[in-house]
Amino acid sequence: MKNINCLKINKKENLVLVSVNPKIYPLDVIYSASYVFLDKCYILLDGKPEKEVLVELRPKNQKQDLEKLSREFCNELLNYATYKARAGKTKKIRETILKKVLLTNDLKIDD
Image (cartoon, rainbow, N blue to C red; front, side, top):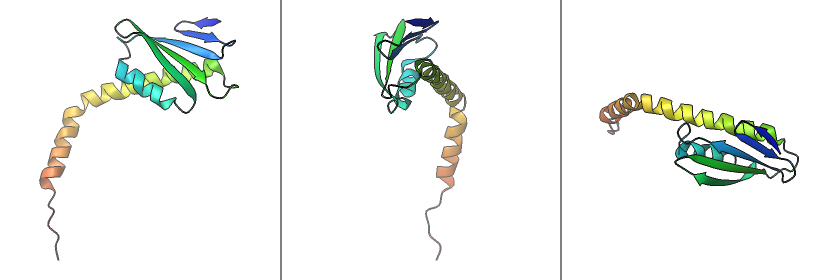
């Protein structure tokens, strides 16, 4: 088994275990990243959500590079965490734009 910080790669069982800190990546971010990988691998989530979430990735393609798969998963975690942070910062702006669009939308059809 090869250990890389939060990654444990087990070539014998063809799986990788990713340890995720939920204080850095909340559960909704972990779910979003996991969802993206449903076509590539079987996913099992475990652990104690307040301390550590363990994500087991078992590739559907037996020839899949496990380290690459796990690093892509980590990149997806970062992608969704960044999206969530930006969405939170721009929430009021998006709401204001949507209100303006809805309030100025005239459904009358000119003949």
